[in-house]
Image 1: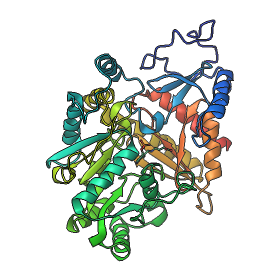
Image 2: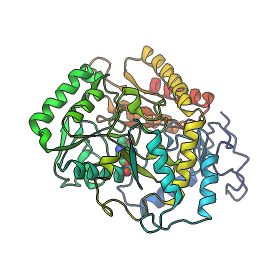
Image 3: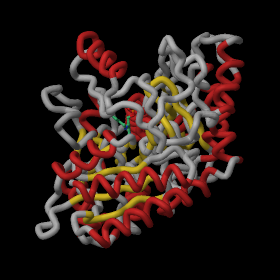
Length: 460
Ligand code: PLZ
């Protein structure tokens, strides 16, 4: 790690010479100031004065560029990125293919509204999603702006198709912050507290959480199905929605057999099985979609985050007969499938399909797992290590009690950030650190990041 000031900073303190993101940024952890440095502090103060207090932040820096495996701040610090903007810049920030596609499109036209004057890139993204999502049945897609909006629309579509109303979501599930998706989200603080009343006809079933419930997939599925049958009734149930690996809820990987059994129950009961792959999609888990890892073919799948290399885009993709149940004009939105976001998505999907990223996710996962396993062998506070591909987490517990240790987790995350490594926490009990690096990170940088995590753990 170099501590000298970056040669890219001009006398006036601007970053004229810093390449605008992309893999040409120096791939190094470089701490020039403590975090936050003076320029970052200035921005954080302006933020406090100008931005609503409810919009939080995890890393107190002013980001000025990002690419490969680093985020640069305005003070010249270069932080190792193990969060990818919450699983968004899976390809790497400002990926050259995405930059090129966006630049070409933005100079051509920025908006017509697809519902007014359709354009090719929207249709191209729909075709690509229909092709790469699990299952070889006939599929259709609709595009939106955010994950929450995609989830809202998946529920609309399922209700219209089944002519039923109830929706089941799962313990620890996260589906967004809009009114309907808050109702689907499990955790009260910070997502729901004080923001009710919530949408009606939402019910919650127990998740398979092997580390805490010890149940087989079949037993966990039967437990959930029994509750659904008793408390909701298949006759009333339009859909169940589940993240194949839960994201915000703690990177919970269900036991084998859990998802297939639920999907099969849905099929026999005219209930739409919705896989929320907003966090797990697009090579993140070492498969194009995590559903594939569990052998399930969802009726509907929601995607966002990694889909467009950082531009806001989201989608619902699924069985044509379900997707087509809505009347013309029933689905849409002014910006849904914006042409710049669609151009970015076409470039991103091309990279996901052709640039070896699925394999890279597994390589990154192997390094993360090996490093965390070594930490666990030396420290019983590392209770569980889980995940797939480049979506790996460690759950921290009291070594004797096995109780969640949120305070320890917060302390480790804070120490990592202070030392120039961006990590994110998650979990119902706030006791999970999740690792979601961009797949463009180098092995060396990833190892250096994990060295910092290991030091933070032993110091905490
Ligand atoms: N479904 C599975 O992971 C977004 C939220 C961070 P939006 N997760 C990050 C936060 O604190 O707001 C997410 C997800 C899953 C839905 C969503 C919602 O996606 O694009 O944030 O609306």
